[in-house]
Length: 385
Image 1 (cartoon, rainbow, N blue to C red):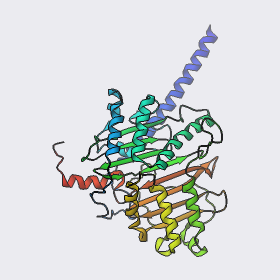
Image 2: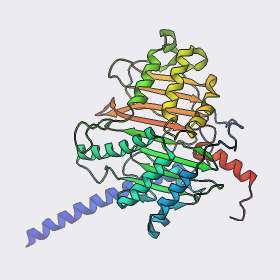
Image 3: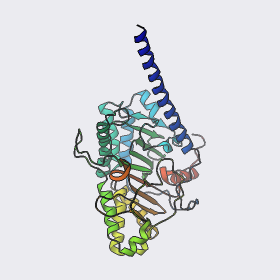
Image 4: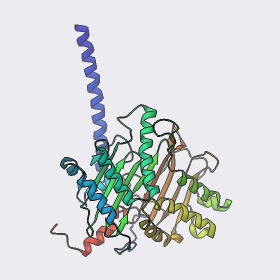
């Protein structure tokens, strides 16, 4: 009896220690989130100063009615408790609390608690907002998170449905609003004002990038982003490659400067300017940027590419790593209205092509559509709301 009591006591102590460790980690992560959004939003800049006048409220001629209808249907499909946890004020810091890591405190309604019909309505919202390719990438990243759970035998940390949805503001034809998808290796911020859309910051990544076995065997992501980046670097002359390369030698560390909680990061231009590229190389650069912008639904993607193309001469392409087959690398594309980062991250202690992170941002204050929101507030009195 004493021995049994001793064993039970040991298990209780171990369980308490494990719970305390998890609780402490959650508290630390919560503190990181709070610190990450503590600074007043300014936006990504090259020198700490926002370039004014880059964005304007205007008609794009591309309807957002399907997005609004899908968001309304998604919210209507939730029960009252789920809806109350999912909806936030338009100016809520929830926008900026996204995190691509696992085990992070999340807000909103989780796919793991949704019914099948609720999941379908969430994916209907994605389908209305994204291109077919963008929707496929979202779907496949979520599936590969299940593959990771299978590989590590850990469904508490990873899994197909460990993703969360929030809606900021109320879906409207004229008033600003938006939605957010948040989870491991997958974050989409989608702001709507009239018929304008801003879809940044966006984080898309995966480890592994291909399922070689398991429930989703054959699923693969982010290969076009990888291959098009490599093709652009390979098309450069030796002198141009030297100008583009910002760190010599093999890539040995994780990189990426504009991820979670880096809304106000100062990141100067680096690498080779587009003005130093020939017509064919500039076309490859535009094709590479279109690979990321093309995650938006057709129409809004074209509007966004027009915006990006208008700053082509100010665009810089930076590179780190080797172009040898199978070697890891990092690249960055940056101009006043877009930042794109691609990075082969550590996998098994060293960077490899089986672990990819990508980030897309709108510099100079328009991530989360915040500059458009500022202009909207300047033009409309919301003091009574």
